[in-house]
Length: 272
Image (cartoon, rainbow, N blue to C red; front, side, top):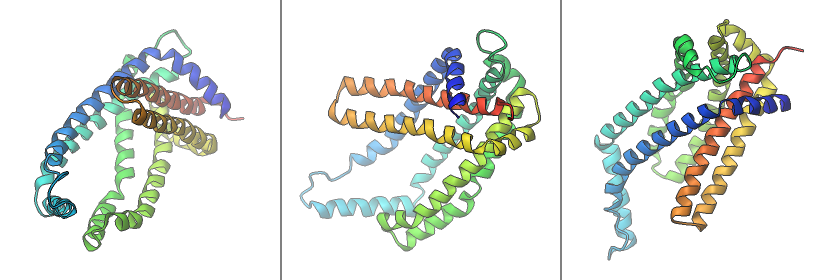
């Protein structure tokens, strides 16, 4: 695993221009998603009775009204449809970018520079099909879990109790998504390199422990850094907080690229 992390960092440095493009892509996506959510949430919050003469009773009435409008009317349908369209668009773009990146990883030592655009032209169809299959399998439990969660909330409309009841199911779903993601990731590596995806699935099984280590360790560093930045912005407000948040988007993109490079190094590693 240590060797994969070291060599993955070397691959990441070779793709510094891809890192900048990935940072800008995520920054723009985050901006539009923020503006969309703000356009939905801000009008609702303007009705919040912060200094109402009735005090707590007014806030309770606000919560009851909001719950009724969300559960008993079609108010949320338009918002959910737009949000679903945005997520679908990202799911169409992401595997195309991944195809170019994985192809460039596979040929990183053959010549200077990157081969992302060439990889997109050659491998986007195969990688997109595998990516779509992965998402369908990973999200399949939602067919049962979402109606179950809705009915559980209707029976017990208490947020704390409902979250406690749903937490084990959410944890199980997260483990399922990880178990599906790792073999499909190696299958995408193989497809981008022009070999059988099933070889990638077998490699993910034989290298499972170091693959799990890399997959969990580097994102954990990103999570800890995100918590530190969030804590710092509570102390330092204003322009400095904005600059710190935007800078950490770059760090998060770098860790994401580094993680993918390390995983690809494990895929490339010859068996002992």
